Image (cartoon, rainbow, N blue to C red; front, top):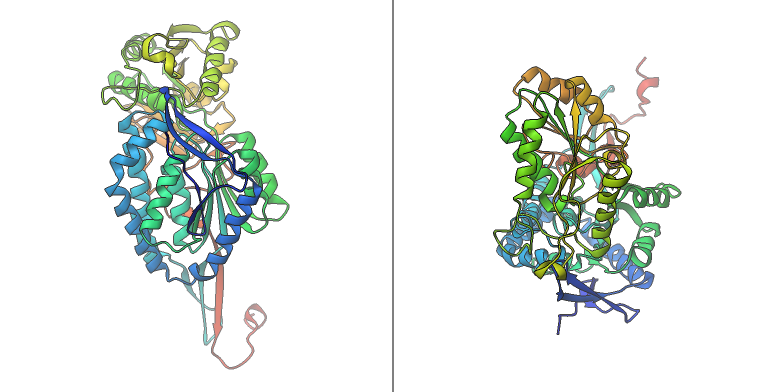
Length: 496
């Protein structure tokens, strides 16, 4: 019998008011029941927000360095449990064990980074225009923060959101993705074991309609941080706009690697394989487009296809596996539909893959083939739309200007990369490609936690996760003026 997991509200593990539950199964082997989780309702969300609002009264007064120390302990505890958490993450999400270890490591890194920010949450002091007057700026928390997180990074993205929110003095209510709730359950257990006070972190599992909607519309939630599709992100933005509540949105991507004629081709192929098929292509930063100079197009394409066909696809718990399954049957079917679009609607040249993997152990999971389409053109659907699966389009280009134009020809603007040995071309691409993240001689994935993460255009709404910039999502600025002159001073009026 599988374990039954409960919501975490006000420091207690509670069953949903609905009495309903849902199953979470391994996408590599659907016979493997990972766990049973609460199918919650707005009533459960209300209880979690109430607990967070009550806990905020005391948590905001805990000195920021002390909050940082507690979060450092969270990192230590995650490190202690890293292998256990990672193994369970692969079971519920499907990506290979090497990647889930990296996912857990990101949460560890975030804890360490923001533990330090508890002592470095800098404001500014400036000289006053007036005599005998002091002035400074400082950060203040917002209140209750709501988090709605996706399934592709089941503990890293919750950490990106919760850790900076907590160090700023906010309290949190998180709705994990329905496909990956166990990783967030494990995260809650770590907070509990590290002595985070009751109500400071809360978790409610369930559907977007029954949990996500009430979480993002409740006026007590002062900031909503969402990662997911652009369509849902727009709804989050609209829900917050009427009350002028803050929201942070991290949404889609249609990222491109540009391979120039002077590139180290084998290195570029390495980057395209990792960027296109890492996490089965289920990353917002996935390199779903590769734009290749016509002089090296055939050489690159031949090597890229050869490497893709050699990838070992299977259960991610096996150390030798390179690519796991799609996270769910519906996600697999979406990817298969795009494969058919590439073949029949766009009529792109299919170089490898193009369907579902079947037979043997594959029949118990949601496996798709590593798929490459060649000679893809900007008007094609597979060039424009985010697929979020194991499909990569290869596009020829005439020169750097053509590559940059095609790279920018998307509604998204998250990540891009260039492979070149020409420093001038590298810096021109850095300047002219309109994305929030850019790589030189590396793939489109691989962000580190101490730089800001996020994108332009339909990828986001201007905020960033990670780095010190994430503090701006979860805090307000307050300017403070202290006049010790003993008389009324009227700033610009008296200073003409």
